[in-house]
Amino acid sequence: MTNRPNSEALYKEACGLMPGGVNSPVRAFKAVGGTPVFFKRAKGAYLFDADDRSYVDYVSSWGAILLGHADDRVVSAISAAAANGTSFGAPHEGEVRLAKEIIERVEPLERIRFVNSGTEATLAAIRLVRAATGRNKILKFEGNYHGAVDSLLAKAGSGIATFGLPDSAGVPKSITHDTLLAKYNDAANVEEILNANRGEVAAILVEPVSGNMGLVPPKPGFLQALRRLCDEHAVLLVFDEVMTGFRVAKGGAAERFGITPDLLCMGKVIGGGLPVGAYGGRKDLMDLVAPLGPMYQAGTLSGNPLAMAAGYAALSNLDQEQYETLETLGARLEAGLNQACQGESIAAQVQRVGSMISVFFTEQPVNDFDEANTTNKPLFGSVFHSMLDKGFYLPPSALEAWFMTTSHTEADIDRTVEAFAASLREVVA
Ligand code: KE4
Image (cartoon, rainbow, N blue to C red):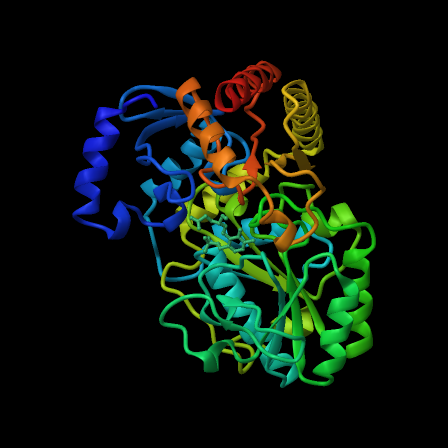
């Protein structure tokens, strides 16, 4: 492993100041080992670390960066907004402009509320579905992550009738009691759980494309089955598009798969790299949100002028041509990674939707969390570090999605594939 003295020193100092030296656990490299790299600059598809090494970036701030880092249009929009004040705590035109841009893109959206993170968006969405239905239970999927929300930090108990168990210290059983866990891509299991909890489920919350157990696409018909089951059981359907929104299509997964959810949770891309989340959907549901209705949700920095300006600068520069570019780059990387694994006779599943991709070192396609966990995590860790030393920054976990931006080039993709093949040769030698 290449040493990075400045990252090492910064990490040592950070560990004396912040838990694990990081402000979000996945950044700490626990899943791959070694010392996290500290970055100081990014531009386009590239990151530059504290030791002045450069990397082709496949984390892209976990999907928040879509146009490429430090896009001139986004940076100037932020600078202009900052010159007029960083926060008013009052309504301003930037909120109207971004809300309009988003609602025009996403057909199921009639109303939207901005918050400051994906976690806040899903937290508000589950409060809203409970307010709307008078029911308490939420059905989610094993392997789906919806932010650090107490009731959603739940793991499956045994059997279909039992309820979620806390998946984090500090979360009381009473809080996850109303969280039901189903198997992703298994509509029969969902139906079974709905029947076992008839009349008690407020909503199904789903990542329409799973990015938090590695990239697991919905099987053909799965999302359609969720829509049908929700209609049959008078249950609301909530798409968590914090990752997929505005990335897998101009109108997100709802557009790509032709499904109309009742509510959507958004984040990442809509902030252009600044802290923004949002939830929205049917007007009759959103009219329940204060100050219009009885469901309370608030935030000092919600609709922040800089974040609104950054989000608008990002989204308004993402047209159909850009989405075609993302599709072409994704397909090129998928083909190259497959070729590299086959060339080195390594059993692997390369799974992709648009510009989100994962490599699972396992024999069979991965359709759910149990299957995702059959991937050879130690092998991924070795490949991760070999790629890092070659100047390619993959997500530091086998169970995360890789993200491309419109700034990635075919040459970047080809170099990545070449390095990946070399890394496979090295680590299996
Ligand atoms: P944030 O609160 O981190 O903005 O969003 C939470 C969230 C909600 N829903 C989905 C589908 C998400 O993917 C996320 C956050 N994604 C992770 C990546 N696995 C963020 C990385 C991190 O936790 O540092």
